Image 1 (cartoon, rainbow, N blue to C red):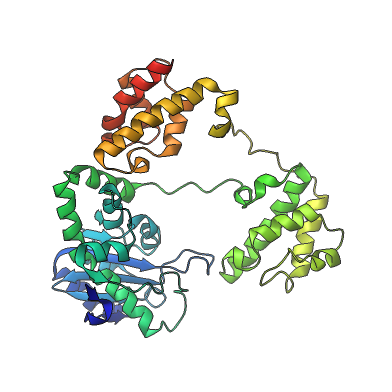
Image 2: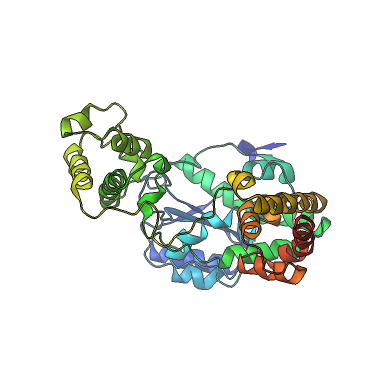
Length: 395
């Protein structure tokens, strides 16, 4: 086992347009796929911007780009845009890279690939240790990457992560070939690369953790106004809303229904960095929620949610029977293919199919229904026939 301290990883920091041009030329002159990574400040900042972008290629070296200093990444995009980019968990980085104009035409995702390979542990450290025999320290992954200047130890961590990706890609590709899973892996990679971003929620405040415990339109109105006030200040300060005060505090304040600013201030459950310093703002929101005539609906207008599957056995036995039968055959197929069941077919997709199956159950109709729900061709090929047979058996 090689320890991280034994590795000699060098990198170049890129903070200007001139340095970016030189780095782009160097990366264009290298060979093979390019390891790419991005560091954000999740949980610290309001926006999910990239605060560091890393790229490494054989024959080129490793480069760390500072998006807070560089406003135009077109030279880098032109240099590497047509090459394969290697990620470990691409879904976490693609959106923030697209915001600065970095959009790959092909990807290889070592994290997703190792899931398809059936690895028990798919974190970068675990996969690198298993396939490359290198022991990485766990550090800085959850750090506030908006910090400036970035500490040297953080930069070393960021450089090493991306520098190992080309070798890791080759090792993972060999495992995919051995298990004859290259085709499904590249199908999954492309699905991740081309996945459309989620449409913004029409009423995002309804996603409050614990919001389901609130009852009545007035309580929902107070929750909405508190959420809106917190979100507005968080956006203005570019800080994660939960760092002003957590969702649990917001829900506690709504349930307590304070009669004055003083009562709100006296609540121990209402805590957080800005729970007292911005108290007049929060009380104004509570007061608005108490008095507004614009009361929210108890549910999102037009929404007809699928009931929670745990209640199906009692209230919707036919759907429960379909779900149990389909889950059993999909689990068996996943085990036979040595693929996690959630990668073969997500639990939510399976539940939606069982809740609203085709009018006529055949392999073709199930295939079409799965396609409408977003299942990939290889997933449909693997499951359409067995799910159709399971549905027919319990009909």
